[in-house]
Image (cartoon, helix red, strand yellow):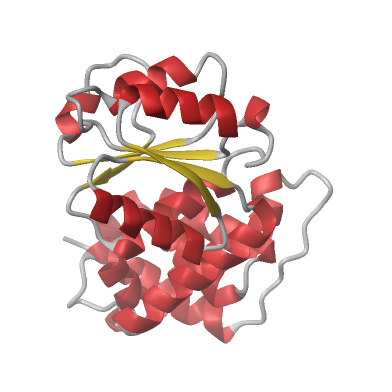
Length: 264
């Protein structure tokens, strides 16, 4: 297959990434155009040992890093776009690649030519930088004490505050009403046989809040009924995945401290 045919399906997504990374449509599109010109001039620069989408983003990363970054935006920039600009360049790249473009940390390391440890540090940095903008209170619904402690440590390490850990449906609903968190991390199967999913359903009419489901049973969230699993982590989970999705859930909400404007 010709290189043009190989990369064509991925170009719309690369444009999305480029625009978010630079903060402007024209700047983002200019970088993508530069990638295409470079590939036309010398197709051999395309990394044949990488999966095509990973390789395309890797070429983009090389070109983006070699040119001065223009992050000027107009007054029409969206809230999330302004937040992206506030991240340092490496944090911004890793956050967008993992949280928006859906690459794994391993793929992000190939794209950016960074080690896995450097990617993990960048995810942590992005999480802390985002927390400076949208730090919030977090409710953990989890019946396994060790997992609950791990989750609490992860979110607190990003600069958020855990306001409670619930082990049952009843505890979860009561804690949510009392603490009114800005983010909920919810398991599905709870200690007394009750459901974290049902607890979230009961909370939502009184508290519109981003919810991340962390479960070993993702198929239970595929019923098509509310709440839909916009943010989902499957057990066993990696710390970097949880951190990235916590940051994503808060970052793209209107404001973590404004429950009336946040959504599952």
